Length: 151
Image (cartoon, rainbow, N blue to C red; front, side):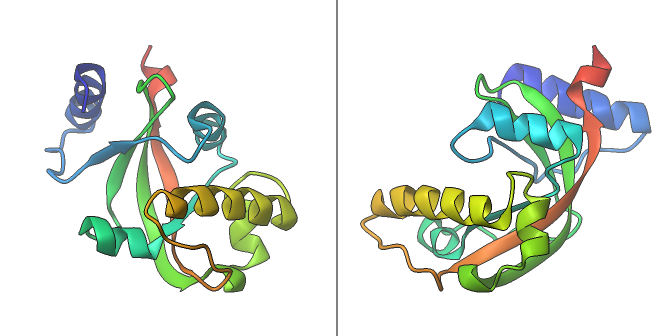
């Protein structure tokens, strides 16, 4: 986590009068970090998904309800703090239209096309193949703070 992001994180918790959780991750969404960060800040993006198999390969813990994260833009500047409100694991071809729309990237067809392309490329970098029935970790979140409001 860079210095600016760490300062933002600590200042947020100082302002609300609590000690910050120890396990926080700062990350960029998808393959267009600026556009997706803007959707988060605007409130249009309230969900995200990731390939379940990559958690296993990378030996990472799954996200959990109540977990906080810092969303970064493409320049790795913080834009918002989010908190996970729901986590499910389901096949990609069973993701509901309502969930896909909560990702904020257009219609269900848009969501499918974007995610299929993204997962084909991402999984290919691990020598894995895409499958429409691949398991996804589907998360819903709320924005608890926006960085621009701090300036």
